[in-house]
Image (cartoon, rainbow, N blue to C red; front, top):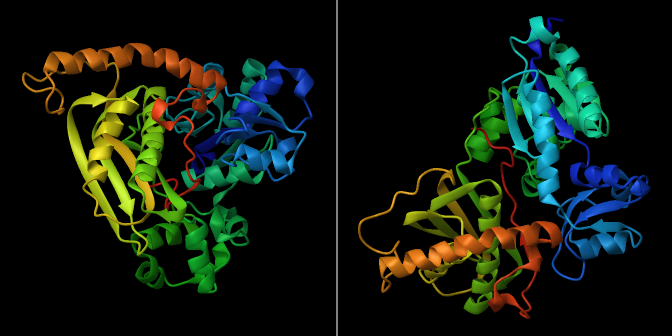
Length: 418
């Protein structure tokens, strides 16, 4: 085998947040440790140790449900400042071997080792060296996948967790893929998997044996994408400077909601979460989009572009609320909000000559004073959210309000093509 045929690495830290906490408090080793929000509120699990996972606990699970599954679990509040510092150490290890690093989150990244062989050896040697360096520099364990494409490298790292190291060579692709359920393919969620199963397609081998034009006819462009993946084909390149295009949040409600006050309460929560995510990434955006879906699955979107980019939840909500009023009355099964047209917060803010950022009835000086006040206090509030959970600080209008629980909306392509 020519090592140049498998230049892509996917490195994923094992149970990252929980592992950092156990590293810093060794007395927690071997115990079911979870990081997340409190079970008494609407907290969710952000990370679970492998001991906790034996009880069926996983990330994004409501903390109350996790507590019922494992009453003895140890729940710790997230410390994102600490996780970000450790993540920077891990990324430094990656970049010491190759400049072609594409971070996916704080705890995982794709690497392309092309051209690094003369300095550090082939991709397999580099992968093993990275595992050793991460353990030495951070005291943490990573799983590594090595393959010819991003999809296969990520799959390889997942198949051998925890503390894994897996290589998928070109002549092993069919052997590895064929027995796996189709849910291992990017872009196939629970609902799409059920559609395939209704056609008798349960494994990747089943999907690969289907005529491509049949899959495209039934599933459109996403069908072509997953059919290619079933054959191990993934043309995406490692993109070191990948730029996030939008950031948003949407939920499908357990029951349809017609009460506009209830919908506005959900919308306010979403806007605060989206804004926090933007600030956490060092971004702000100009274009706000509201998405609403009725019980008959008819989807409506409304969009507005601001004069000034923002990462403040109150500002995003003020626009999203007005966009909601443009949606015809009636019950909704899904509501979402997203912010696009993003820019780095360090970019100079170009101010308009007229108007007040799109707020009618307000002078420009009043609007700027309000915005600057919010921007001054927000970093302090974010520190509280990171230390004690995102529900620690919330708008006063949500206090004491019982809001129906919402379920995550299914997404067709969790790892979309660029």
